[in-house]
Amino acid sequence: MAFTHGTLENEILNAVWTMEENGINTKSVSVSEVLSQINNNGNVRAYTTVKTVMDRLVDKKLLKRHKIGKKFCYKSVESREEMAATAINKLAGQYFNNDVRSLMRALEKQCTITKA
Image 1 (cartoon, rainbow, N blue to C red):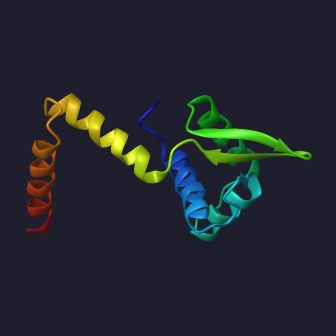
Image 2: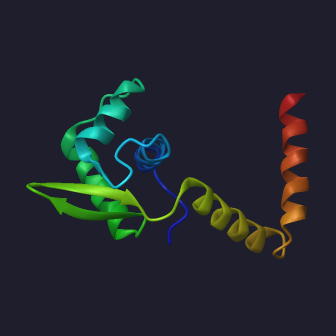
Image 3: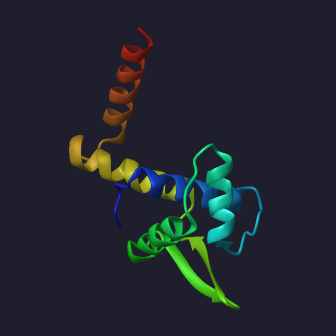
């Protein structure tokens, strides 16, 4: 599973997760619904662009796709929390010898630096 995403991929994943968390189409979301959510956040994206990126997220195994009638609908493979936990563990493994506490200390230090 890929852990690096482009800006639009992140926007799409966050839109899907938000709709799932809010109980909006908990089974699946359409490209149009995701497009509406993204465009409501001040970004203007084309339907075809969002559809292409959502299909790439399917290829990356971050979204599942199925057909309902004539349109494709999508669902996240993992929740926001599950994906975050996996990413945190991978980051801890890469840079902190699998010690999540060391990662936490580094994050706390970074928060202190950015506050100053």
